[in-house]
Image 1 (cartoon, helix red, strand yellow):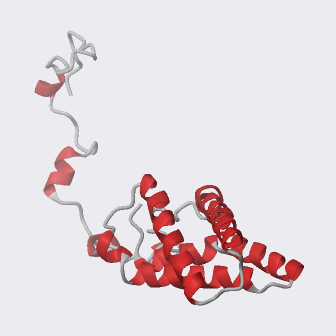
Image 2 (cartoon, helix red, strand yellow; image 1 turned 180 degrees about the vertical axis):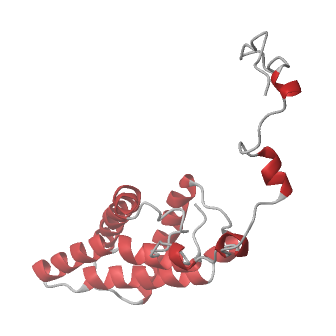
Length: 187
C-alpha cells in the first residue's frame, strides 16, 4: 500500500475510534482522564508524523514496517507522556498503548477492507467512487450523431450486403474447417 498523507490521516482517525472509546470507558470508570488524553496525544503525534516525517522517509509501506513504526511511535508517545505529565502510571500507559495499537491494527486489517472495498486502491483515503462524467453526458462521435451519415467504401466492401464473388466461393476455406462443395450454383 502506498498511502497519501491525507489517506494516512483519514485511516489513523478511523482506526483510533475503537481505542478512543476504550480510553473514554476507562477514563469514566477510573476517574482518571489520562486514558483519553493519551489517545488524543497519540492521534496528534501520529498526524504530525504523517504530515512531516513519513512522506519523506516512506515511499512504500510493506506489512512488516507497520510494527517497526509502532515501536517508534511507542517510544515517542512514552516520552511525550512523561514530558506532558499525563496522569498514568508507566505500566498502565505501556499496556494501554499496545492494546490500543492491536485494536487499531485489527480495525485496519479486518474492518476497513469490509467497509470500503476500494480503500487500499484509494491510497487509504475514503473517497466516493463513481463516474467522473455520467455516461449519459459523454459526447457521442459526430458520425454516429449525424442523420445522413453514409457508410464508407471500406465498410461497404466488408459488409454482408455485397454478394461474395463466385471465384472466392469456389476456393477452399482458409482454416480448413468449412467444407466447400464441389459445385456451386452460378449466380
